[in-house]
Image (cartoon, rainbow, N blue to C red; front, side, top):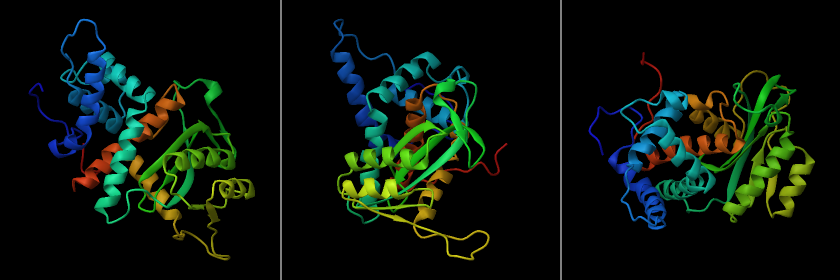
Length: 279
């Protein structure tokens, strides 16, 4: 790796020991398919550092610092990892390790599902956007499923106009496919009977958590606070403060990247720096 001054977003040796083998094996498999047999010219750890820098700071691709790999190289690796499911695979593997560290079984039995509508930049095509009439937001909707610890199990990004039922069904299908052990789900009042009935066909008991009648102001609701906290973790990554991605699949990959950053820190007992006190 080229010597340079480290950035706060750089991955530590301990975290790279968790993530590196998967990315290096992927790179080696690519190299073995080359007829020339040339060795790797790109340090995948520095590529990953560049992705963490972009994800954390919210910059555009062309603004990646010059002491990191060229933005074209970084995007090439990112697009390949996105399309081949490498980032999603890493998130699943790290989630299992984090659960074991917390004394849980590697596979979850319960999930909490919620959606978040965010504004888009000028990059996403109009056909991938919509209006969330309830929240008056023009953009996209992120539907996520977490475990009881708030760790990401599945994510689906769609137009903000898509109803919560539909978005929730898609993310529940994905979560169940990745984690067949799930038998319980908690959702908010935006999810209706259609979601509950669909969950039942998957062998999942879906419970709609409602507010206590007469309660005013902020109130912590059973289980729902877990997924809200996960959205808070994601918002520490400025690339996710707005949806800048052309493809919904890229939006999902950026969320996976943010959670890989978060979960790997949990496993190695490293804290995630906040933006307070920075200039």
